[in-house]
Length: 269
Image 1 (cartoon, rainbow, N blue to C red):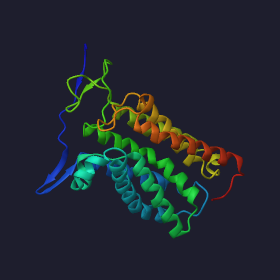
Image 2 (cartoon, one colour; image 1 turned 30 degrees about the vertical axis):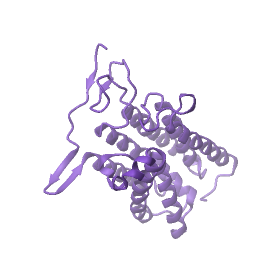
Image 3 (cartoon, rainbow, N blue to C red; image 1 turned 120 degrees about the vertical axis):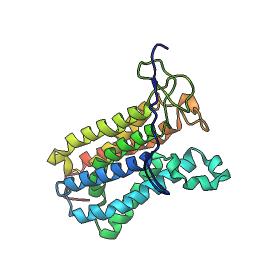
Image 4 (tube, one colour; image 1 turned 180 degrees about the vertical axis):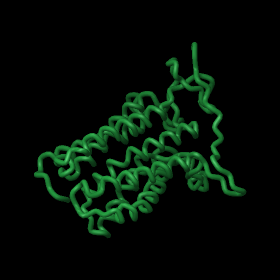
């Protein structure tokens, strides 16, 4: 090893007011949700279907509940079930980290389905809007993982390797930053460019499929550099839990894309 970056000394608490402590981890999630919400409002009206700014405003609460509950439940079930069954109180300590994207994703899907059913909104069009804004939340969520020094990468000799507090003395891939770039920034740019095409916006469900497949590919790629959770380790053939959970997303995304191009462009579905 000729060079390594020491993990910066970051106080996990951003603001402390008496007994109230606001952590950077929580702020990152808040910024991601608010940023996605505001961006989706800007897109409202450009996609087919009668979806108002008020609908998007009201869904923010539903999305927050879906992300937090789904993300935590997914982490408990997929990544550390035995530990949480032995320490049930720890399930509620979300400020210590431990959120599953796939669980949070399912939470938002369920929330969107129930919300659209209640408001009688076109589900696929609403899903396309959410898909365009989702990478913003992913970007800040992965930054939160970096601030928490969690979900770091495998040992490496690249010059940008980082020595994490809980990762031993050897430098590791800052895989959280890789994910922030691929799942967040790059995926957002792709969705942004394509969403400027009116013909594509009329193909309901297309952007849902692009997000599914795009995230699945990005996550599966970064998993080759990310250290598997210690309680799970590597699975069959050196694969990881993140890759196994991403494969269905890629396949479902491809189905959405094919169906969107096979059917005639519609006003809303």
